[in-house]
Image 1: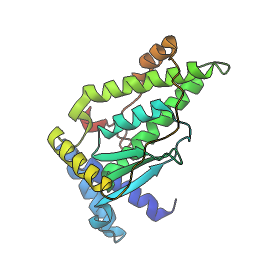
Image 2: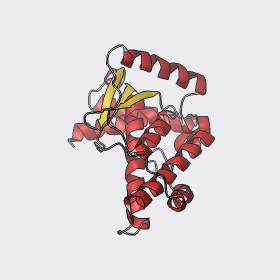
Image 3: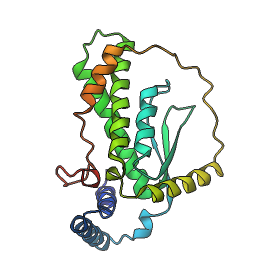
Length: 220
């Protein structure tokens, strides 16, 4: 990553933080973002408008990843779909929302995979490992629902309206097709699933902001 890309990444995070309900935090973030934009001759126009970003995934249909993507979409005004040919997840929306959604999605997927690697024995069967991951994803969905607007910098009305606008925008430009591949409908191992649900409470839902320490989404 070049220095300019790193700076743009930092500015995006600061602009996202500038929408925090904490006025002091928001003002400080906006001030720092403006300073960096001025220093590097960047404009806010470069961080606006609808964009798309692809997050790599597996060609194999993995349902728990879809659960995570849907959960993340509840936090940010984005629209996403899974590319049937590559298995990648493609997110659409305003630059800051897409940036934060893909950051959170990647963070949660990597965290779930890391927890499965650490907490499940190496010789465990595929169904057991996937059931554990599914349990974590299910609990994360519930936690995000429980937190509601505390997780987002938009109120529910704004979020709903913006998501609808993006959906129309995307569907008018892209022909979406259903995945013709049949996924294996394997019954979950309930012991592994429940273990995943329990372990999910230990996952931080922080903003993942540069230099933000332990700040939580929306002050949570």
